[in-house]
Amino acid sequence: MNYEIHRLKNGIRLVHSQTESPIAYCGLIVNTGARDEAENEHGLAHFFEHAIFKGTTKRRSYHILNRLESVGGDINAYTTKEETCIYTAFLSGHYARSLELMADMMFHSNFPENEIEKEKDVIIDEINSYKDSPSELIFDDFEDLIFKDQALGRNILGEPKKIKKYTRKDIINFQAKNYPTDQIVIFSIGQIKFKKLVALVEKYFGDIADKQGFKRTKEPLIYQPFTKSFSKKTHQLHCIIGNAAYDYHNEKRNALSLLNNLLGGTSMNSRLSMALREKSGFVYDIESSYTGYSDNGVFSLYFGTEKNKFDKSLKLIHKEFNQLKNKKLGVMQLHRAKQQLIGQIAISAENKDNAALSIGKSLLLFDTIEDLDEVNNKISAITADEILEVANEILDANKLSMLVFE
Image (cartoon, helix red, strand yellow):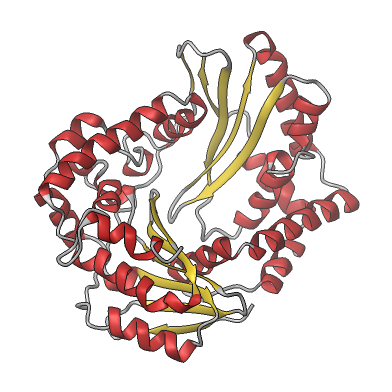
């Protein structure tokens, strides 16, 4: 896949890959998320993401939602700890419609007070839905404990009592402090020629005032391993085991990604899935994950099981951990692990929605796009010694934490 990049005078960047598909994927991603909130702003990044759908200087909420959906397209958004993203899918003939709408929402929202008040209830319902889902809530609570008393640890959605107090002015002030133009990337995959796309982006985004000076507060990690258990009166016992990990600039991140995929990735033949589900029947769902942030990261392993199978499950998990810490992978084991991850990445890249988000995020964070060959070469270069080193750092029993909902 070939990419072309353009930078506007105000610092906004554009990355595009031209394809033959009549379906286009286009979005806008900003290097601002929940961790960029002050303590008295908890939940405002996510609130802002909701609020930009509620009205602009020339559109009401209905007209925003109808603008793309009336021609069969789709628009959505999300907020993470470090990003805010608006993304669209549509027939390629509607690029102008999509770009104009995103520019209007991002830079000309007027946050009508009556809509803001209604949206508070929607967000509180979203918060409550997470509380009703322990398999999702436990991830937020685990990161809150890993990054204790730090902005990176706070959940993205906020707290109901704070959400209720926020005003239109709070959202406007939060927007004014954040979302600088040099931290915005527009990403696109579609039929449109790059020259025409550049002209449209310049038309709708070129007159946005240049705003730079992005400053993210990076707090030194003070991680203390913990073991905590909370009664949730659930049918299953839910558990997360994990550790603080590498940031996304760390040279060891690729080895950890490979180790994670081998240990408990998305495939049913991961080591933990085979040991706990296929061979023992102790769990239905077991998966590990690695999330890198700009200055820290987190590795976590989640599983749910019957309470009388918990101790047996833990024993099997630590057995797999110890094998990876004490014995280097054999040549064929390492080769198969690499081929599996390379194949998964290639298949994911065929999903143009995922691919569009991926190139946008890559340009935003690294100011470059790695093609599949470059990614494959980095994975292929990982050695058994690197896997062993990372396993002993991340899976060290003295550094692991555990959170249990029972």
